[in-house]
Image (cartoon, rainbow, N blue to C red; front, side, top):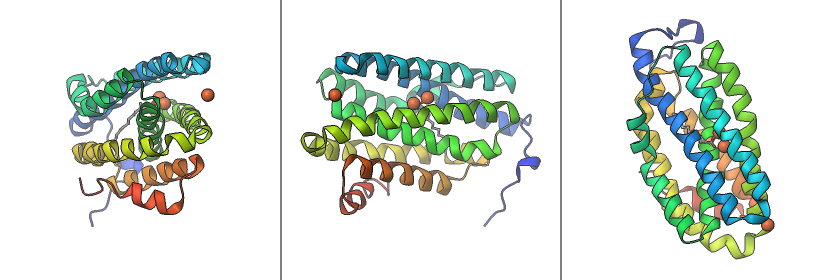
Length: 230
Ligand code: Y39
Ligand code: FE
Ligand code: FE
Ligand code: FE
């Protein structure tokens, strides 16, 4: 097993680091942009929660600006084309569900899967980030918990009638997360973020969320197994 560099050994200005950062930073910027749009869409689908959802969308827009400034600080140009392709399938699935009025699927994709992905990535990034990005990411991760909480509370309140749709949406979308992680495994490693740690943190957040919504341990085991080999 290869020894990872410790934080004091990371050269944030090296071409190798900056090249990997151009893709990871772009993914985060594009993710925040899509999260901004997704919460606006959810506000249309859930008019009773419009004010709160618009508030969440504005937070996502601030996150995007924060991460853009992290790229500028390291003099890295984010590869937005790569990031758009990275999110394409998850994005299409959200758009399609929204057009069919499937709010449960939309919430699973944005408020559970994408938020847990963000929380895991930011957790693993914070200890190895440059000082500028660390401060920004620490503030962002606090917000992401409130976004995850919105999805958990709504889905818990509507659990009985949502359960079947949640299982189908999980089956369709969880494998995409593993595919996405595999695509950036190398770049994440250059940033000293290990794939195993990302997977572990994601599964903890996601399993906890499913439990809070009302799924049994047995359900969670079954649902978590989808696409692990993707
Ligand atoms: O709700 C949010 O703010 C989520 C959109 C942001 C997604 C960030 C996705 C991070 C994936 C990074 C993968 C690094 C290995
Ligand atoms: Fe965000
Ligand atoms: Fe979020
Ligand atoms: Fe409601």
